Image 1 (cartoon, rainbow, N blue to C red):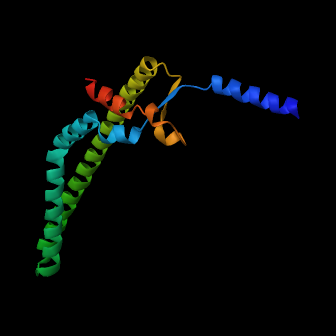
Image 2 (image 1 turned 120 degrees about the vertical axis):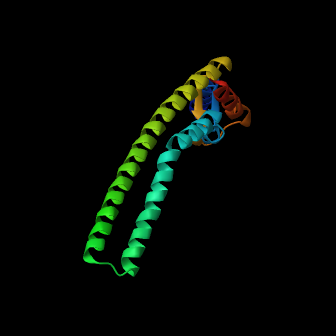
Image 3 (image 1 turned 135 degrees about the vertical axis):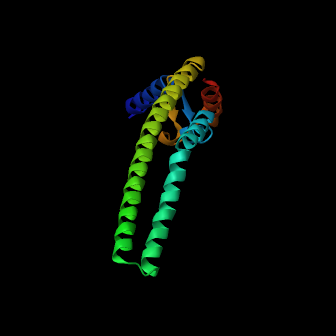
Length: 162
């Protein structure tokens, strides 16, 4: 029994002596407070503003055409003309929506790739500066010492990257 207790104590002290030095980062907070991501969002919104304005106008036009078709007494020729106009605008609307959707996906992917690269580079820099074995996402850690939280340093360095 004494040997078992002694081996447990030796084993525990050995594992404590070899415990990894880690830092943790609240990635969610970094994402929410990233000046880069906020800036990219503004740039993207400005780039699709003409299309979104056009989409909104087409939606209004289609609504007005539909309302007119339901309330006005139209000849067969007027109905046909209105139907063709409706179809043309509906196709234009669908085309614009697909164009904007493609732009959204491409922009999000490029932004995510750039941001992820920045975060990983800064994490490695913080790991080396603080002589750590690892930097982990705060959500992946059940418990940690608040002194090991590198979130503010991470945010400061990520926002400083140009």
